[in-house]
Length: 385
Image (cartoon, rainbow, N blue to C red):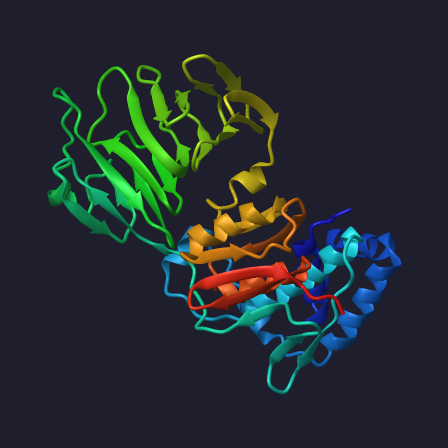
């Protein structure tokens, strides 16, 4: 049975448009309806509303890759809203751990109201992160970059400033630092062809050209690497706590603060420090925490969600969620004392949306209230009726 609420929401949306379902979709829908009486009740209610809903905008769902989407000029699209509202409601019903939220829609004005508001927007909305960063050159000069940077091709728009050369490195390595601030992200292709996606509030120190014996970069924050294979020159990612050694592979490194998590999507990597060393396989992570290095099975969909431009919360604590919002939207986040820190929350939405859409999704799948005022977000416990 397909339990992904977004897949079920998509199937229901097709029903709203009177589109035919293929056999797989029909079976998935029937299985979901039969799984619990509340599922059927929800489906009947949604289907009853669907007859009067204007759904032409559903046809305009942007299917381009996340990184291509976010590089283009954004427009406010209602196409996202219906999908995650239905999906969040489905998730609530399926989990049976939270009560079903009923919301009303004014089809004349197109405005939607939640039965008990959990979102208080007292200021202008906050837009999502943009493609952009700055490079601090070895000589201290700063160069702003607002496009992807490909050192390997030699076609960078700041090629003259950086003085990248295709000649082999026969002198001391010259390092530059890529700085990605809050509310930004960046992609860079290094001199050897290695592609690196760098998350907000991160720094990547890299050389103009790699030396003959090894390839080494230095990371603070989070980045996803697709390392160009070179058996003669192993690739190292050095963090403050551990080093990661690879030959050619795809992996993510999250090194915000003292905890470092390396998640492997393809190939093999070795994670090490002065006293410990582990090798992980695809689907595993090596986590450095409190002086210990442990190997665990990991959820790659969750670990790589940021690189795929998705907020994917799966049993996440509110502190972790707040930190992601803080980095992506460059906001200050405060938690009231009544917010339980041990509770976990699940939800999913694209990251190329305004903050209000993410907060409304979180309000649907939690018992929390979100108040945004002048770039400051306050999270409190929702008042019970």
